[in-house]
Amino acid sequence: MPQRRSHASPAVGHDAHVGIHSDQAGLPGEHPGRARNPIIKVRDLAWLEFEKPDLRGAERFAHAFGFATAAKTPGELHLRGTERAAPCVIIRAGARSRFVGLTFHAADVADLLRLADATERTVRPLPESIGGLGVELVDPNGLPVRVVADTRELDELPVQPALTHNFGGELHRVNRTQRPPRVPAQVQRLGHVVLQSTRYRRTLGWYLEHFGLIVSDFLYYDGQRHRGPTMSFIRCDRGSEPTDHHTLAMTLGPANRYVHSAYQVADLDAIAAGGEYLRDEGYRRSWGIGRHIQGSQIFDYWRDPDGFLVEHFSDGDMFDASLAPGWAPMTASGLAQWGPPATKDFLGIAPGKESVAEFRSMIHSLREENEWDLERLRGLMKVAAT
Image (cartoon, rainbow, N blue to C red; front, side):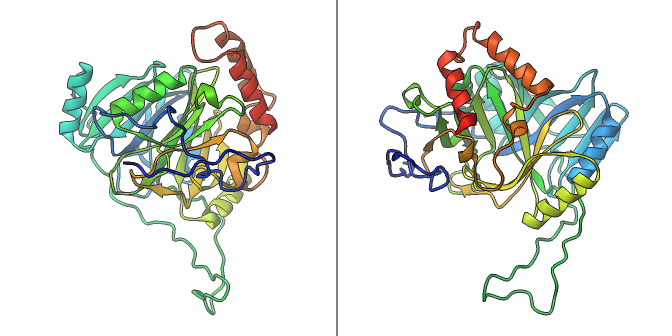
């Protein structure tokens, strides 16, 4: 059985920066955060797919952000980290910029066959550039989701070393200075992707039931816990083997869309010096540097030339399958333990085409049959103010 967190009701004046990850457990009857009998249990997030009209511009930003190019043709760009793995981002030429879908790694081909049989899909060979086999599904929001096995792994690249630190009287560096170079923060691997859904509960259930994912933390709108969670941080179930606090995060909102994706780098200095490099190259920081609460990652968020939000992170939490979900109210101040306040750009409320599109989605979605209603809208507006 999963270990239970102790339950404590938030006190009046509760400090959002103290112990919020684990100070509340689920109440009787609340969402358990996992499926009883999932079809398969995926091992990890494999890659994300995008379409963009300017592959050259996409590659320039990718190199400044810290990716390496694994392969490219006039119509396709494969980006990778340093770890031995398949490319972690695939960008294809398209008339407009859009997020296309996500891909998970299955444990083996037998799991692919099981998934295909349960969903009445077909296991198909992947393109030669990737290798292996895959099953293509569509989630409740219409987003393509692929599960793959036996893909071709790229050789490991030389890694950007983490710095050696002195901790008070604990000395690890003597007669040597600390001079982190102002270079791109070298991406090691894809960590997670965050999606927004108008059918949050249904979509969450679909991912848990199909892929055996389990929830690390639930967030809920203040005063609306009785209506259930509105965000979940979801990890892979590898049993006793630790895995990232979240590989997928999902939040309720007025539109079905990509929110951001995150990529691991060596340490805080890589993030900071890499951020200086990105700024010098003319790119726009959205929020950071700080340390999250859910997941504990040190983070830094940037906008690519097409407006997609991408995150560097390091020092994230690793959980095995024994922990049950934590619960916390969703607040803007509760997104980080330290760092600058969450920006309007990160929250999606800065004046611009993204906020205008989100506002239009709010109005349109209120007329549709989904989980987004006036009470949820009031709850979301309260998030940005607390």
